[in-house]
Structures are given as C-alpha cells and as structure tokens.
Image 1 (cartoon, rainbow, N blue to C red):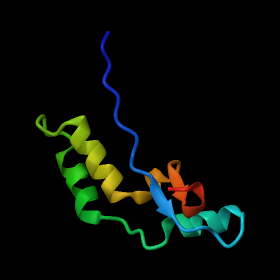
Image 2: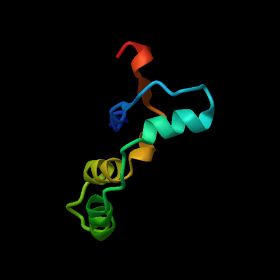
Image 3: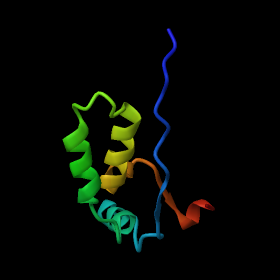
Length: 80
C-alpha cells in the first residue's frame, strides 16, 4: 500500500526567549502571528467540495492558524 505523507510545516521562527519558562517561549514563538480568517473561512467553506484536496485543506489550515506549527519551533540560538 502506497501512502503519501503530508510534509512537515515550515519551522516557526522565534527569537530567543528572555528565560526558559514555557510562557516566555510561547510568547516569543507567537509574537506577531495572527489568525488568517480568510484562509480559515475558505477551509470551512470548501471542506465538502470534491475538488478541494487534503493538501488544499492542509495549506489553508496551517496558513490560518500559526499555532499549529508550535511543535516545529526554531530559535536563533539553534543556529538557523
């Protein structure tokens, strides 16, 4: 059985937090990020459209909700 996997979302770039507390890391990672309601509404509107692919849905949702990329954080201290 051939299975195609969705690619990992792009790294969420974050500045080095002031301390190692989870709240500081989260605040740094989400600084300046906002929900893209146009993309979120597009995903909701088209979810039952047969021509709207899983890739289209993935692209819309990850663009709409940057917090979904929190498990892929990179800080400038990581050398990136």
